[in-house]
Length: 220
Image 1 (cartoon, rainbow, N blue to C red):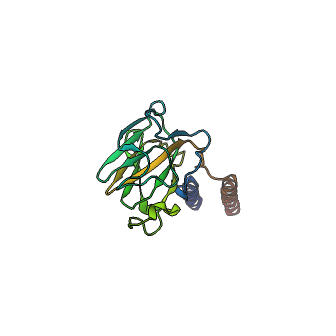
Image 2 (tube, rainbow, N blue to C red; image 1 turned 45 degrees about the horizontal axis):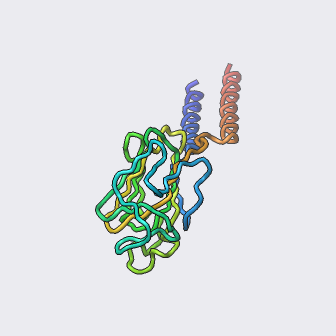
Image 3 (tube, rainbow, N blue to C red; image 1 turned 90 degrees about the vertical axis):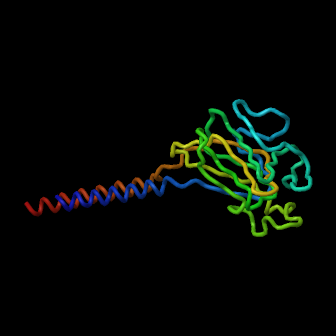
C-alpha cells in the first residue's frame, strides 16, 4: 500500500509539472514595421487629444516629424508619443484589464524602457530596446531609418494567471523613446493541458491502479 501511495505521489508531481508546462509563460515578439492592430483591440493612436473611454495619459509629448534629438517611427507621418531623456510617461487603461499589448516602437534604443503595469500600477514586466533591437542600437547615424530598429512589439500574458494589463510606463535614459499605435487586446485561454496530454496522464494513472490491484490479489 505504501508503494501505491508513493506512485500516486509521483504521479501528482508529474501532473503538476505537466500543467505548469502547459501553462506557458508570457511572450514577447517583434516584427519590423508598423502592423495592423488585431481585431477587437483598443488602440491609442495619439492623433488629436482624445483617448479611448476610461484611458488616461500623463507625461511625454505628442509630436509629429523629427527634430534634433528624436525621430519619428519609420514611415509614421501622424502624431506620436515622444518621451525625452530623463522623462517618463504613463498610459493607463482605467478599470479595463487586458491580456496583451502591441505598439510601434520607433528607433529603439537600449536605454528605452517599457514597464507593463497591472490594474493596481504594479510592474508585471520590464522591456527595454535591448530585448529585441538588433545590435547597433544607440549608435549615431541613420540607424533610426533602419526597419530592424523600428519594431512592432507585442507582449502577451498567459490569460489564466489572473493578471491583467492595466497600463504602460515609458521611460528613457537618453534622447528619446518614440512610439505610436498602442493596442490593447484580450486572448483566448491557453493555460490548459492539451487533450492528448490529459489522456496520456489518465491512462498512466489507470495503469498504476491496475498494477497495484494485481499485486494485492497475488499477495492474498
